[in-house]
Length: 282
Image (cartoon, helix red, strand yellow):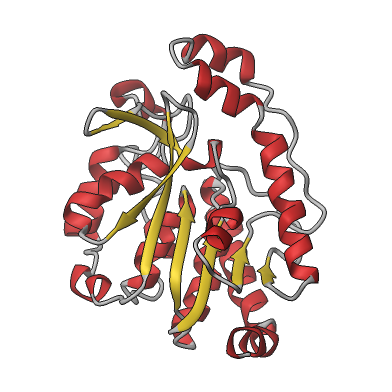
C-alpha cells in the first residue's frame, strides 16, 4: 500500500473511465492509504478495494436494458432514475455479489463525499461496514432532480459532487503529501453554470444553502482544477484524465461507447504506469 491519497471524481456514466483506471491498479496491486470517492467515483472505489476486477464495469453496462436499473420508468415509479432496490440490494447481494470480506481487509481509509442538504456543505463519511454504510454510497450518487433525498440519522443528503466534486483540498488537509487524482473530463475542460438551476430553486426551495452550493458549483469545481494544476506543478499531485474527448453523457446507455471509455481509462493508466510508479514510490 502506498502512502498518499487517491481522489476519484464522479460524472455519472463517465465514471466508467475510472473503472478502467482502477482495474489497471488492481492488475498492478496499486492501493493507497486514503481513498476519496464522489458519486460514481465512490461506487467504483468499492469494487476496487474489494479487488473485484471488472466488477465496476460489468455492473454499469450489463443491466442497462433493465428498466429497474436505470430508466425514466424507474424515475417516475420510484423517484430514482437509478433504481435503489436493484442497484443497492439486488446487484451487490445477488446478481453480482460484493466481496465484503476482502473489502473489510483493506487497511486504509475510504471516504464517501456527500452533500448535506441543510448546510449545503460536503461531509466525508468513512466507510467500513458496507452492510450499513452503503447508504452513504447511495447518498453520494443521488443526482439532483433524478433521485430522492437520502435520509440518514436525521440528516438529508444528495450528490457529493454538489459541494465537493474533486476533494483534493480534503485529501491535502488530511495530511496526504502526495495524491493521485482520477478525473473524468479531458484536459482543458471547465465547468459552466448549471442551466437547470432555475428548476432546482423551485424543487429544493426549502434548502437555500443547498441551492447556494449548486449555484457556485462551477466556481468551486474550476477552483479545484486550478488547485490540482498548482499541486501538479509542485510535484505533489499525479493526474490521470481522459486522453481524448468521447461523446459520453452523464446518463449514457450506448454500450459500445461505454466499452470504449472503459478501455481508454485502462490504457491511459497503463501508459502512465512508469511515471505513476516513480511518483508514488519516491
